[in-house]
Amino acid sequence: MKSNGLYLIDNGYLYIIYIKQGLSTSLATSLFGTDDYSQIEYQIIEENVLANPDEIKTRIINIVEYLRG
Image 1 (cartoon, helix red, strand yellow):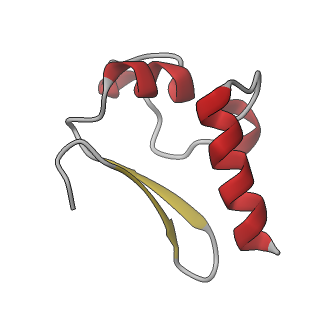
Image 2 (cartoon, rainbow, N blue to C red):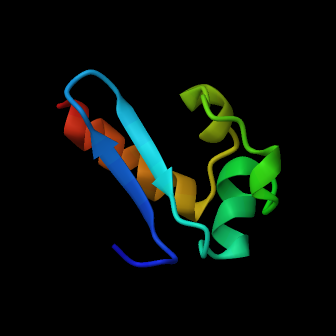
């Protein structure tokens, strides 16, 4: 696993977004509204993260929808 990665994990019950500390600030800001990891809650509701879609969020939405299919 790369030190700057963002990983979507499916454990058969729920999807987990695993964030490595070196994640780019632009990606963190796009997804979570902040690049300060202490401000990101441990449990994140999908509707909050994926609201106001941009290019990155649209890609994640497409992946999640594919996995749900």
